[in-house]
Image (cartoon, rainbow, N blue to C red; front, side, top):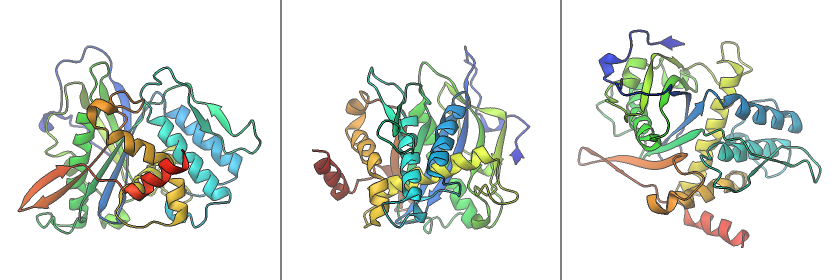
Length: 320
């Protein structure tokens, strides 16, 4: 765990206009390398993380699945592993709701029996999720001296974009820690100063804690030296969400099990594609954002990710 203890003034990240105590968030990151480089960033409020972790733990207990979860472990649409992963993804979708809008919502329990499969979801978690694809992968980033620097550079883009999107007039956000899924595939430890460098000034009601922490140990809770168990669970949820979104949005076929388990995310993609005016009426407004960036003629270009409409049409057809 790396801790920045010198404060954030050198990054020009502090705001001078906080009237109320900010809401503390921990941030979890994972990536996918298929059909581009996909950053998935999950923002989890500290005051509601126990609620989310309890739902995830109960699903593990009900399905008797205690190994690390990931879409890449799925090869069929039946069985306890599929059921556990599917329930986790559905709970992840529920956790991104920002306002119930007066409507009921339920989440799966993983349990068997007609009356035990779902429970009312009546307390907001208000997590947030950023999906950012570097179109074409990290190869074109020639100015970065190593692979980890490319990850750090493009993470900054996704992170600041999320901070801007999630800024609310009625809530202050304080980012307390950053968790990345293991450093070994980066070939070095991540550099907290490099991760935060050039972020600039976040939106008025968002700031970074003076002693922000960064951890990049393993997310496999079975391994010695892994991150704390609860943080491993939230990193695994981040993995499932980024892989699910990628399955819906990538311009390539995906295994049947991956397509089936990712179906709940197609509704969110559809809501996002309505544009800000249409999306503002959604329960998930300011709960997630989806975008991509790429280099063209030496300059970064940013825009929306076009969804795989074949999957969306299948989803709409099946739901009537």
